[in-house]
Image (cartoon, rainbow, N blue to C red; front, side, top):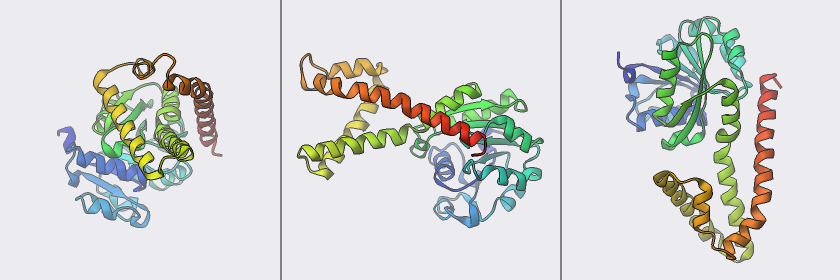
Length: 270
């Protein structure tokens, strides 16, 4: 059976579950009929069904269809109840959890009959530019880990790493879309304060962000070298960076530490 013939079941049709399902279809990696999604009482499933994805009102009938891989795309606080309810149906399957802060050992303990892989994706999977970290559990084979990596590589970039590294990736890369969006919003407000029209400022900043990302990807340059290209000695950019960099540096480290601390709390069930 070819990998793109494998049936992928996704429990949860929220932002991430829907993004994964849509992305796999839009990338041409899987036929819509091979993607099965279960939302709580069908919540979030209607737009997916319109794309030919098989949608279910509950996880039980979806799991009864026998998907080869099951992605648990539910919130960390909900995951224990989902695993307890569907332990028998998940036995013998490759189970991929994307829940932040819930360690592989806890999932393996709750699902002793399953092969477990953890993945930390970010929301950019929806536009096939996602970044995902993949870590296999004690019960997962190398083939299982590679399959999980292949699924998420179809949605952007995916890398296999240790679970402790995956936690850091979740705190840095998983939260980065929110960081970037906040930075654009903050710069927009700064531009408005200085006299620019709000809509024009935001539009130009968003275009700039897209352009920077495309140029960095195309060139493979180090970000610091890229920044130096637009930093003239004694110029306006140099003056701005002098003010921004210390605060951005300190804030970035504090933000990642806060995300890791919250992940640890989630792991402890808080």
